[in-house]
Image (cartoon, rainbow, N blue to C red; front, side, top):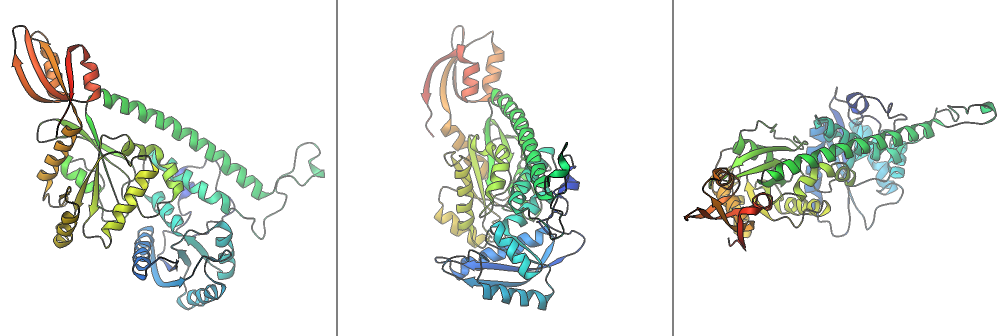
Length: 449
């Protein structure tokens, strides 16, 4: 891992790969990492160990190896070092003995704490947020994904810029009469360049968000219900999408393999089509900067008709993962969207899946890898969506076969009666479809599940 306090972030026009590659991690070697955690009042030993286990997975995904762990129990973090001064000395000796390259804190470090730790330890000190940012940097492939990651990274780095020991205090002079003033320091120049780049990225992402909004409007006009797949990272969301739609989305057994949303059309057992979207995985204590930067992408969940919440039955703490997902959903204003809990990876731990089903009785158990339980899942999501729909009575003249085709295509026919001059149709329709077919609507009633 390289120093996050580097003096220059690169030109505002530097390409993404050049600007961000290796910002936190040196890909040419497997660095040795010491993990550090502070256990605060209320934190059990089991929860601290589980969090460190997850951090170890994050570090491994980022391209480094854990060589040791250090945990200190405190009533509150030390305002200077986060851990106590004596513990910092112990950490330094441990790093020297193991020839460790970097220390990674499971807790979030303030910029001043990070700087002082690096100065005393003589090596890079990172926190959980930095590691997650690095992984996102590796996995972003689309223009929007790269811009979102770069924005989050620059926001993280801005308060951590510090003047190097050999930095010149007056790198630039003013214009006329500049020889009489000290001009800008390199630190000020770097800060200004980062702010310019942040402003540009925010503008670019706002434009992309408008484009996505137009795309959503187009999908809304299609009258198809939208279903977003959400869940903890590596819960099997992309595998589920691939199994259901043959979409070919990257699906790997590693954290944050998917960052860019993918939408596919899916036909439910009743014949009604829906739009199914895979989303970026969530994680406990997902950095706020990432949530802010990815808000345009994550809003697909907030604007969905239904959420498919995938949970890994074989995970060490599935309840904690469910809670973490709900916390992020609240942050992106998606907590009110109805959800179906899907207990995945039943093939890996059938007993755990059965226990979760007994607790969450309104859920379904599947294995996206083997296809087990997917018929039950499709029936459940179809029933849930129909329960949300509104039933409309329409009268369609016999010479408007195109309208009947639209009703069949976009909704669910409940009943059809042949009259003298046309069909009287009772059907479940989305608001968008009902709006387009408004001239044929006779009456409306709420659907019953």
